Length: 428
Ligand code: AMP
Ligand code: GLY
Picture 1 (cartoon, rainbow, N blue to C red):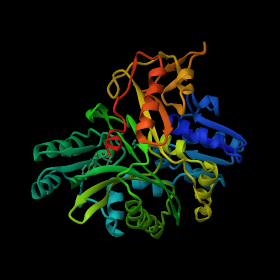
Picture 2: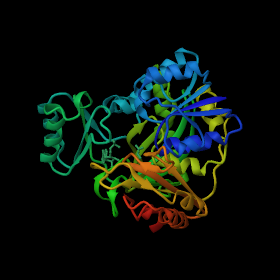
Picture 3: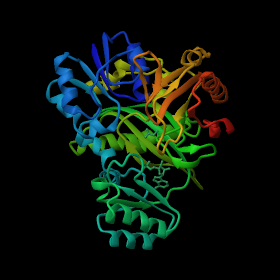
Picture 4: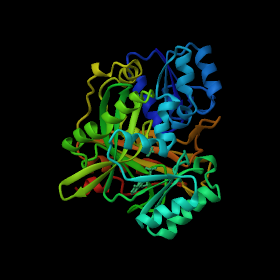
């Protein structure tokens, strides 16, 4: 097969590495990719949200299969365009991607199909949203309806904070159209975990659990980021809880989306809160994403033993029931290296050295995110999150130690990372 992967992050580097290892893969392209991806795929200079440009490339080059990494092109309808042209693609249609593209839509689907989640209201009027906050009290959560680059959620400790978040979205227009509606919902207290399942429109195949670290600083301090590190599996999601998540959350959502005429194909990424109740731990849905997590994907692909491309094609073909996935024992752990200043304004075009030394550390793979190769061959940092140093080991403590050995082998003074990735699981 001639395969095109769309995206340029660590997630896409991990997908490209896994796909390149498949005997089904004849030629691999990535648009637009990065310096690390260039080692396994031919880079295509087309942006991930340039739907017309991507469609043209696919047609001109007779691509057989397209794997879409980020949510942007999914919400823009890239998979719909490809499907109409008879090109197979991994990822949901725009109608199914609404599960991530509109939090209000997602909440309505969960309510309609009885999937456990926080109670909520949808509002376009600030006064009505504030009345809802007064009625339920703080803590309470305010979310911009649409895609807001991870900045649209406010966990408000006080009513005043909730009012400010409502005004920012509905009155000041901070998120533009994405914040023209807000969801106000119940605050859920517990431990967060991510769960991933492949879906083919009808069937769902569990992949694995993972936990990421959103805050920029050690001890979960400082502003939120796209994710400073992750590990898989997450021990909080026991096999019993995983079965329950499949039965109560993933399967009813897949059935519900099919019943709505929006069959979900691709990977369903459920953000879950595991709540401690007198009856034991209870999983509830915080959010859905319609793509792999970044950096969670780096840990999943590192653990996957089976042919990733065969599984992605089966999801697109609607034959996931014939797939049985095998995983490496142990834990994969990814430490993200970011550029100084991230998640605020960060430095660009600084040189990264020591990549070969880091990759030579036993069990370590360095996935690239915001990197590019200069004409003179040096690798430069060009993004906020720049590298994902990932290790696979029998225990989470060993995986953590190995990943930090990889980090310490790098020579990049303008980069930084958290030093405590995996602390919850190591503590357990
Ligand atoms: P989301 O983009 O919906 O995942 O929200 C971003 C983050 O906000 C989540 O990862 C949680 O840490 C937090 N969050 C979202 N919804 C809730 C909720 N209902 N209760 C508590 N925390 C929440
Ligand atoms: N790491 C969280 C995400 O990809 O949304």
